[in-house]
Image (cartoon, rainbow, N blue to C red; front, side, top):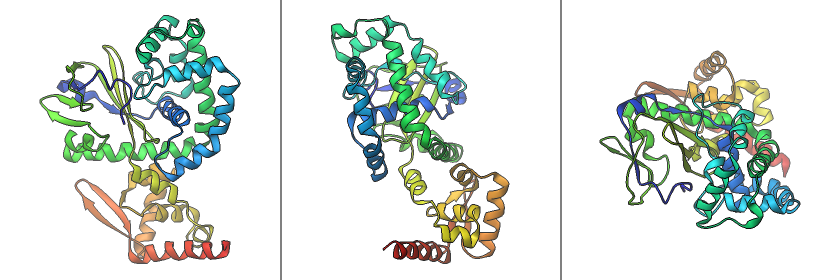
Length: 338
């Protein structure tokens, strides 16, 4: 669901220049904020997320139990259906800045701005214990902990999933326009035409962002929110394709298949449970474009994959023989484990 700004925004009014310069970007900070929300709410939308919570939430709870003041701050920052503005800055233009650079933006927030933010989130005065000047540093510290302990160890794979989502959205945009690219981004969001981008279903006055920078930022947890630095930058943070996440989770090839085909070729075949382009395969496997192309050529010649054109893209998918090979390898592995 969309969280931050849900009570304030119905739709954004954009002009042609804003749309022409809008970008899909990957943000380590956005991923970290989404994971902090998961840890705080103890909610996950899929089995992999539940396993991740089981692994990391005990340490998160211990971290806050040992620092009650920070625990109070986190509870104020992450209200139901609301995330404090100062920890969700939109990308600064380069979009893919490293985490330390993005975190420094949070750390440099003025204490007065943080208190104003929390007052809005709480709908009233903040607790007396939070009337202090070190709140930006405390917030940055807990975000850094979440990044180092719960995101960074998985970042290489998560980034591939995020990049694959960007590839898919960009392809939708080039082939079918904004209606297709934004249609399934998040519930309640859609392109209305006439320069209107609906953010949620609230009947609120439009926010005119014409001339500003607009970013679309995927995250792997099932979280979504909007953020802005008026009047210059706005961002829609959205949950990336669940199918991509599930495919990536299932796509580690059995060791026997890697021995049979080679690890790189096996990884490509394992990813193709749904049709994918070469660019998506590059993003998800981490292999170079030339390597993926060579693997696909051999898999095509062996009859394990086929290809078909979809608009301007060429999509690859497993044949029945490819499906049988994957299933046989996984079945053999399961029998040996039992």
